[in-house]
Length: 273
Image 1 (spheres, one colour):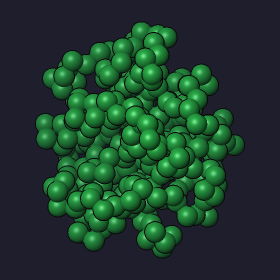
Image 2 (tube, helix red, strand yellow):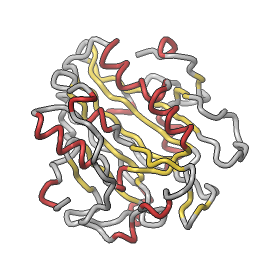
Image 3 (cartoon, one colour):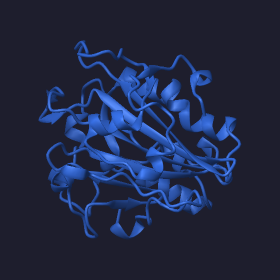
Image 4 (cartoon, helix red, strand yellow):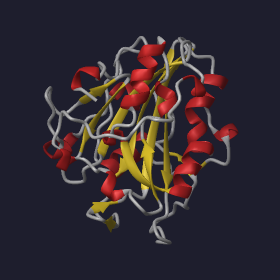
C-alpha cells in the first residue's frame, strides 16, 4: 500500500466544535515518529504508536452517520493486513505475533465505522483499517465479544438511539498498556481496552467513556473488573490508567462523577446518553 493512498486522518472539527485528539503527556518521548511527526494519518482516522510496546497508544476516528455504508457494501474479503510503510517495520507488531495461536488481529478503529463518504473513499478507509498500527492482539473469544457484544454496539447505538446534531460521532480508543501485561513472543498483550464517544445532542457536546477487559491464558485479573464486561468510567479514570491526556472540552462533556468507580453496564439501556 503506497504512502500516497493514506488519507488526511481524524478531523478535530468534525462535530462542528473543535475537539482535539488525546495527548500523550509524559509518554510523548515513547512515540514513533512518522514523516509528519508522531501522529500517523489514515482515511477517517489517526493514531500514535508506542515505540516500547509497538502498539497504538490511541486511535481517533470520525463516523458520518448520514453517509455510512452498509457493512457488506465494502467487503473485507481479500484485504490483507499490512505494515505501515512510512515507519520502520520493527516499530510495529506484525504477523509473527498472531500466527498459529488463539490471538486475533483486533481493530481499534472499527472497520465498519470508517465505511462512509463516497464509495472510493470508503474502500480506501476499509483497506487502511487493516494496517497493523490499528491492530492489537486480542484473544479470539474476546475479539468476538468486542465485535458482537455491548462493546461492539456502542457506536451503532449512539447513531441509532440519540438525536444527534449533526448525525456524526467522533471516537477515541486504544489498549491500556500496563507494565505488568503478560509477554508473548516478545510482545506484551494488553488486558484492557478503552473507548470514548463524543457527539452533539440538542446543540451540546457530550462524551461517554468506557472500559473493557480480557483474560489471557486464564490469568486472573487483579482488581474489581470482571472479564468480558463493559463499564462506564469517568475520563479521570482513563487518564490514570493510560497516562494520556484528554482535552478540556471532552472532560467537561463527560457526566460520570470523577470520584465514581467503574459502573457495570448490563446493556445499552444502562447508558445515560
